[in-house]
Image (cartoon, rainbow, N blue to C red; front, side, top):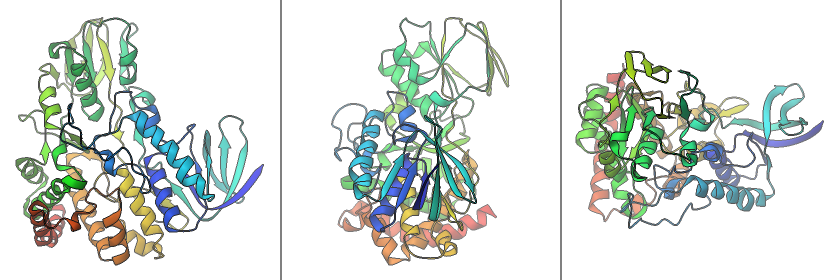
Length: 462
């Protein structure tokens, strides 16, 4: 049995694990062992459907030390006018280069792919190869880091929970590119980011809207991509923050909060006549939204219970169907709901969202706080978890704890300076653009409303 020692043992080499390790190694002289069940870094991006892109700009995704993409504004296509959004293939190649050229090159990081973390005993932590079964015992001098706690659930790894009769063709979005004959029609099952991507891809590929049926048990709230732009367009993101804080200061309840943000154009929904019950932080452009609204055959009978050759059974009734339909299962949760835990514990770190959206920024923030030298109690004050449950009702706790953590870190000069220059922060460099009236107005609104917002959120949540 092989044995080794390290300061940190990180389980998971996806977006969270890679961003955490990159920032920790840059800020300290520690040694790190990274373990992942996949063959290379990249996490769920290795299993993603081929036509997926980031929903947010590449400019603030990935790791702190290396730019993803070219910080370019697209001039044509559906993303015209916005900063580029990388494909899954580009992201996987990026993480491979980060590992090889940034992390392993330090001589302080070791990577164990195709390996499972099997827990700890008196001898240490156990890592087992999925290829050979060899067990490596790892003695950890400082902490175990669980970078899988907020791991995404993706369609290609997901098994539908509904029954499927023989002869019914149900596929993940990944398999759409392998179809070898026309379908009578396409039924998209699910209401989240994956379903939106799938519907838009089908439309872009020439499928007429009347050949798409969309089973959408619950509608969602989405960020308008125009408000999520960084760098030269950072004023848009600052306006998002300002309107978020203003709404938090004035709202009477969660419905009032989201409706205020909708009135400001920050949040959007597909059907203005349906009150959304879902919020997972996904982003969409108004062009994509208009395209989705071309699909008229939207089914709202609750969750699917069974798909047969001639009938679909739902929680709320049944629907006749064509046996030659292709069903695209998009019911994987994506951002899985989790119960918040203290991020910093005696012998471990449970990496979670500590910022409102953007997993790499949260992970890098956790690493920056870990490297601060504070005790665990103080670290938890600086990085309270922001838990996405998937329900619209969670948006007020998300606002409260996201703002609480931001305020706490801003009061620590070294952390505030780090955050301001971190490339994973969508607001990076905004303080240098006070000559831009949009940025200045946003800062003024944030400063004016921040404390009233926190007091009001505490009142409303109570």
